Image 1 (cartoon, rainbow, N blue to C red):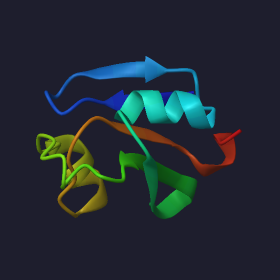
Image 2 (image 1 turned 135 degrees about the horizontal axis):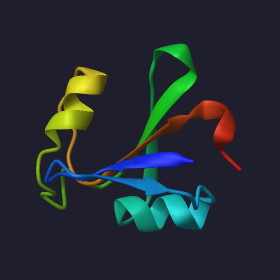
Image 3 (image 1 turned 45 degrees about the vertical axis):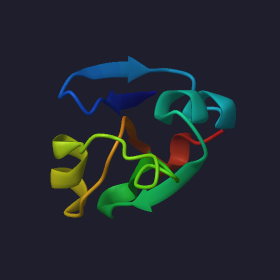
Length: 79
């Protein structure tokens, strides 16, 4: 299971962690941002060019500027 960190600050549980499910969550092609302790963020690869809104929670977690809705999950959970 993953947590969808929405750019509006809300969070949702996300259970579809297949490739198509992750693409649906972030709204397009995915890019992975690896974090310590076996965690990762799944972001929209084209988020900046699409001018998606800034995501403060995900940016704080990753310590870099990220945009759009983003999945936070364990690396081992990828199917």
